[in-house]
Image 1 (tube, rainbow, N blue to C red):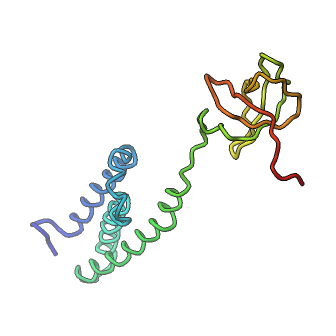
Image 2 (image 1 turned 180 degrees about the vertical axis):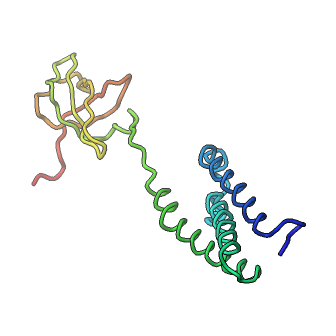
Image 3 (image 1 turned 90 degrees about the horizontal axis):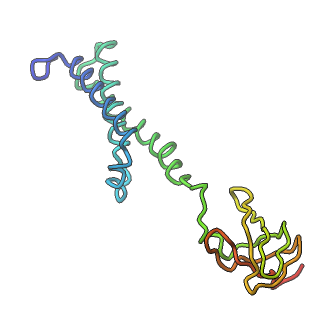
Length: 177
């Protein structure tokens, strides 16, 4: 069978090459057009490009290796590509999207956290506190919020952060065990 004067195998092969190049370009420059598919889940460019790439690859393989008619091959390629694209979306792209968590923190995010004094904080001086987060331990220079002295190993509440220094108060839990 021919399409536009070109053998159908060649059409599938050229399509496969073009869509594969588009996939590689999308991998490098995907952030630029990432917002296109935010509202409609299957209008994700990665899903569409994967469907077209799977379709062209399956069509080329079936045309080369089987004697089925082109209509049957198009139907098989459509069904198999749809299944593979749905699996790709639900088992790879969706978990990756929900797992996008930054390991970074900002100074503003430390306010309200509980820390522990590792270097005593003198009156009108600096000490050091360590804050335990899901990302690990963060140690910061600390000052008493009201210029009070805070002893070693005491729990503190971070009130605010200015210029990399945390301003803390002694922490008194509401409910004791």
